[in-house]
Amino acid sequence: TAIADGSLIEFSREMGAYAFPLFSSAFCEELMQDLSSFIASGRTTSRANSNNRYSLRLTEMGYDGLLKPLFERYVQPIARVLLPGFEKCELRFTHGHTVQRVFDGAASPIPGSNRGSKHTDGSDVTINVNIGGEWTGGDLLIFSS
Image (cartoon, rainbow, N blue to C red; front, top):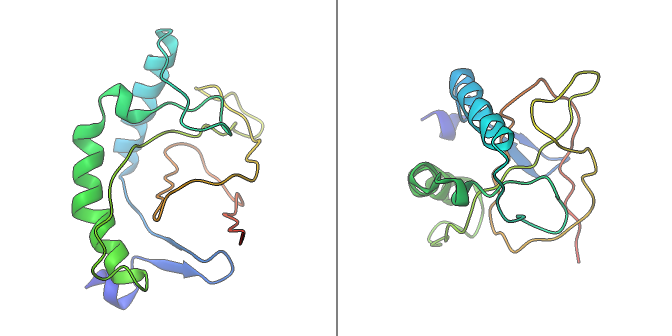
């Protein structure tokens, strides 16, 4: 399979994280348009965490029908294959949220910041997806307690 031979999934020893394509460009454009329209309408959601004042809780926007199956059909099986100790683990989906980052040198279609400060959360597995713009850097840093 593509997972087993590593052709779709890259592992960064430096960051201790995996990277792989998840959504098509067309889907990401549609999602970005939906988020932009939601914000333009003046609607809001509760904040996902104390670190990101611009976050939107996708679960409050009606995305559970996408997120829960994505988690059950893809995230859980991938975690079982790639993460030591998760082979028989039953993970629990709790929520999805956005983290808006500002495009360097260009206007962002949705408000955001580049403030990514050190924070903690209770996740065993986190999926970060870039749905807009070309990005370099933005390394994931994992701190021990």
